[in-house]
Length: 258
Image (cartoon, rainbow, N blue to C red; front, side, top):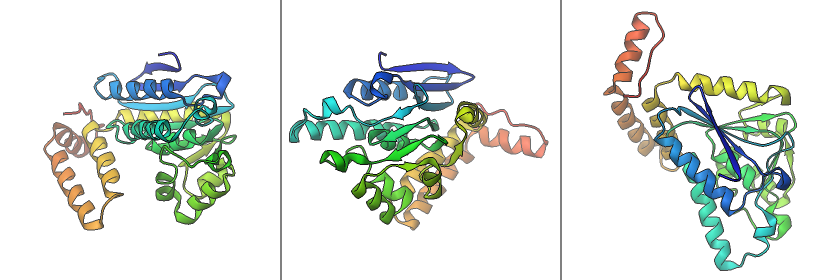
């Protein structure tokens, strides 16, 4: 890995996009490394939760690498967008929860990557935006799709058509992020949140992620049916037996992912 840093502590994998000279912008190589790391984490027994962040305090991910984007044509642009979407889908569909720790600029592809994470925590200095319109293009990694699902049609149109940045507080107000904390508390806050996730039942967490992702794309009756089937799956696990027994015995549950 050349453009990302990986560190695993206490069953938490921290993935840091590390291109500070480019404000952690996403190019093809960085996307490939992120995809590989997320896929590898799915089968790593030492990983129960994932944090994605950017190196330094100035930028989470400032967007796509413009020097690479400037060379695109219709054919290469389609390939780049399709591959970027594939990477974002890999994050969104991760069976292990992914938290975005947004420390600074989350623009374009950075905002799109944050939206693909299951939980987003921003520092007070974070700035979000889909400024692609100012380059004469549109978002290609899900910025017209995930944004509307998170903040609604009107706000998604505003952010995409104007291309203006919004601060962390505004992002929180419209539902783009889950929590805003002082910059010097971001790492600790996200680490505590991730640690809590490591104590949860792994199969149940995966079923929650699958059910919410599926339900967001279908009718309510279909979503409820999917939820009932996922509930049935969890009822057949050792974790369910451990969780209910621990509750009755007034002790903490010790889940093993079986």
